[in-house]
Image: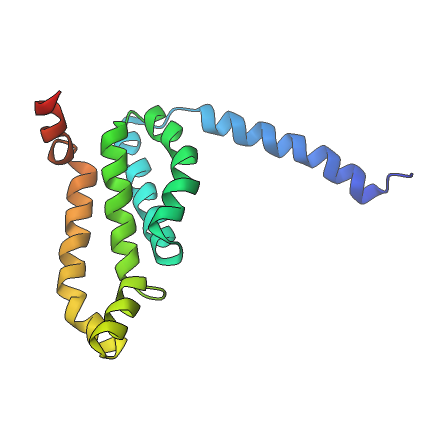
Amino acid sequence: MRITGRDRSESLVSPIVATAASSYARKPLPSPLKTWTPPLLLNLFLLILGTMLDIFSSVVLIVPLLLPMAVGYEIDPVHFGIIFLANLQLGYLTPPVGIDLFIASYRFKRPIVELFRATLPWLLLLAVSVIMITYIPALSLWIPGRLG
């Protein structure tokens, strides 16, 4: 089998990209970025994931991938779990999928738009709560700290 020019260039580019990505990932972030950026990206990712995927499936598929990174950024595993579930619940209530909205629409025989308008203030409150939970770890770690 003969290697064409395109195959040869792809075989050269792939290790270069992998090396650059791994060296970039090993560089520490500056201090302000290290404290604010990873949780913000985690929140955005989990919110998008929550709109598309069931909570149980998300936990089974994504937690094993994200937990080592969270520990690497010095996020407590209990705090990470609470952030994870709060974000997924927020995503579960928001369109386009919003499974909770579909269930409520079916149960109460109301249009989804009407239910979304009715839940909008609560969604905003939940979004503020998720931000507070994310950036004030004592809110989620106080009780576990008292118990053990």
